[in-house]
Image 1 (cartoon, rainbow, N blue to C red):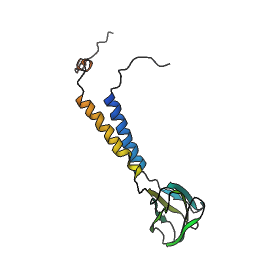
Image 2: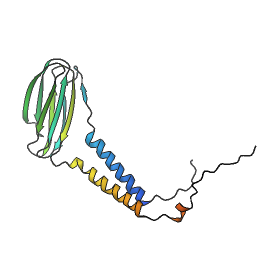
Image 3: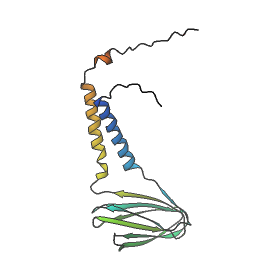
Image 4: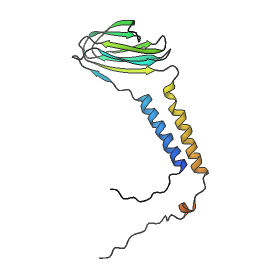
Length: 172
């Protein structure tokens, strides 16, 4: 098994810095990373959904490979159709579509490309922007860690660490 050994205790300022940076980086990935859906011509219609609050909306960017008619159906949690739109698209044309939630609940959508390949980007736009919450919290924790690090006096152990390079003498 691994050797025991000891390690110095982690300073509270370092823990705050690590936590703040983790929240900032995690928030960046959570908010900014949108993965395209490569929908093949042989795939069934693409369907998905999400829990939305009042005013939240789905934003779609759809690009098709061949000329086709796409159909976008928006349903509420009971399965009732809220809207069904059909759009004619030329090959390689980009179509942007927005579906807004009238009330809070689970909403689903279905995109039928009529046996034509497509690249679909789906983004959820939140009205209350709760997905932005990690940014100010992470920045606050990071600032607190940096403040603690700058305000803390150096300990005697840190002052006694040699800064010069030492070479070992090896016997033959």
